[in-house]
Length: 322
Image (tube, rainbow, N blue to C red; front, side):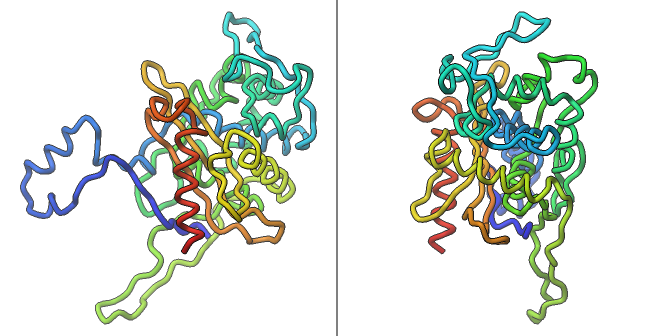
């Protein structure tokens, strides 16, 4: 519906400390290098890493007419044209048999070489259409201030290495957690992006309702057919791919992991997803995005699958437990 059920940003702060009106309290929070006053859910943008592959897959399905079963080249490394850079997979091996891998399986195992090559083949305009359809390069209508999620396009069409890196959610791509939650929700909601909102209703002093927020659509990010195919592919990510730690017993979960390299720092790690997956329209009930800033220092391998996906599982478990 677009209703925000929970929004968390760490580190946080106790607003009661500011109620005294002592300037020192606010000055101390403002000077804290951990930026507790920054709402990271809406007002900070990060490289989305492989969670961005959901939008690349959407572009492939919509603009290029690919299907989940379309075979892509399976390479252990991809030299980028006109550059000395080489794209490799996370384990520096092949993603499948070394010959081909389907688009669905490439998303499930987060195959870097396949998506980098796909990004170059799709081109800048197809990527631009897919990301701007879901809200990138614009302002999300919301109750709180939001940072823009960005994919700069100046010169991208003439720069194949930049296209390849962009398709992996790196280079100049930046996204807020709110934006990436809307990406997951679009796939869940037959391609429709709902207008997100915090305030459900306003009551007067006597408890009488004076207004209520009515759910409304904001964008049509993709066709129903593309959303259905994307849902199928995202479910495989959790069923037998990198997002398996987000699985919830008795609930069909769809999602995508991301591990984004950050210059000079530890990777930011992601999981986006929704549940439950069902053939009936309107059946999915919750979409989410989890970002752990500098989370690559945590977990067994410091990835979105090992760090962010278990957080998503905890949230989904609590939701479906009531």
